[in-house]
Length: 436
Image (cartoon, rainbow, N blue to C red; front, top):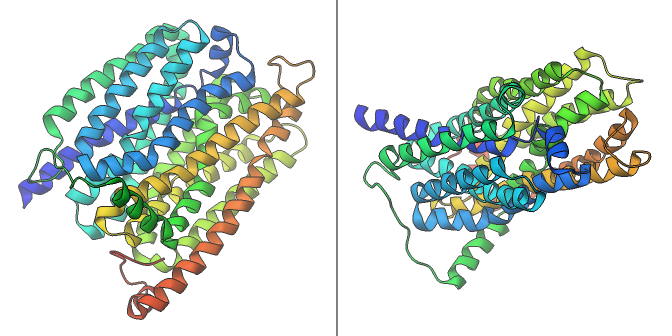
C-alpha cells in the first residue's frame, strides 16, 4: 500500500507539472500583449484574436477530449497534449508574421485542451474517493503557478532575452516533461496504458445526452462559466494592459498584482476544497457568495473617480483569484452526479463553461476598446477600459441566475429519486457519487 501511495504521488506530480506548463503557455501573452502588438502590427481586436483562437480550439475540444480520455486513457492524451503545445510554442517563438503566429496559438490551444481533464482522470484513478475533492482543488490552484511564471518572470525574460529566446525556454521544458510522461506516468497502478471499450457513435451520443440531461452537470457548467473567466481574462490578455494603461501602474506593479491573483487562488483553494468535502449541500451557495464578492470588487474599481488606489486593486485581484477555486467546484458536481465511465464526458462539458465565457469577454473587451478609443490605434484611455471591463456584468448576471436555477433542479431530482441520499446531504454527509 505504501508503494502504491508513493507511486500515486510520483505519477500525479509529473502530470501536474504538465498542467503547470499548459497554464504557462495559455497565459504567456498576458504580459507580452503590448510586445505582440508591436511585433506583428496588431490592433486590440487583432491581438484578442490570438487568445480567441486558442480558447475557441480549447472549448471545441473539451467534449471530444473527454470522450477520448474515457476511450484511450489519460497517459496517451497527456503525451499528445504536451507534443502539440511544444510544437505550437516553437512556431510562436519563431513567427514573424501574423498568420504563422495565429496557427501556432491554435496548436497551443489544442494541446492545452488535452491536459486538465487527463490529470483529473489520473486523480480519480490513483487517489481514494474522499480525497478527490481536495486533490482536484490542489490540481487547479497549483496549476496556476504557470500564470505566476507567465507574469513577472516572463516580463523580465522578455526584456533581457527577447521574444524568441523567452518562448524557446518553454519549448525546452515541454520536451523534458514529455520524456517524464513516457517514463513515469501510468494510467492506473495495474496498467501503463488502459483503454475503454470501443463504442459506436450512437452510444457516444447516448452517453453525452445522459451527462447533459443531469442537472448536476449543468450546475457544474454554469459554476465554471460564472467564476472562471475573471482570472482567465486578466491573466491571458487584458490584465496587464488594464493595470498599466487603464489604472496608470508601472510594469513591475502590474506584474506583481497579476501574480497576486495566483497567490489568492493557491491560498483559498484548500479552504474551498475542505468546505466542499465537509459542507457539500452548500457548495452552490458558496459559489454564489464568491461571485458576489467579485462583482462588488469590480464595481468599486470601475466606479472610482480616477485611478483606483492600490489597496482597492489588491482587493480586486484577491477576489478574482478566489474565483479560480470556485470554478473547480463545477468539476466536483460533474464527479458526484455521474458514474465513473461518464466522468470524462461530464468534465468536458463543465470545462467548456469558463472558457466560453473567457472567449466571449476577451473578444468583447477588444471590440469595446477599439470602439471607445478616439482615432483608433492602441492609445487606450482609462475611460475606454472602464467601458470594456463592464461587459463582464452581462455574464455574471446570466451565470448567477443559471446557477440558482440548476441547483434547485438538481436538489429536486435528488430528493425525488433518492430521499435518503438527499437527507444525508442536508446533514452534510460525504458525497461520493451524487448530491448538490
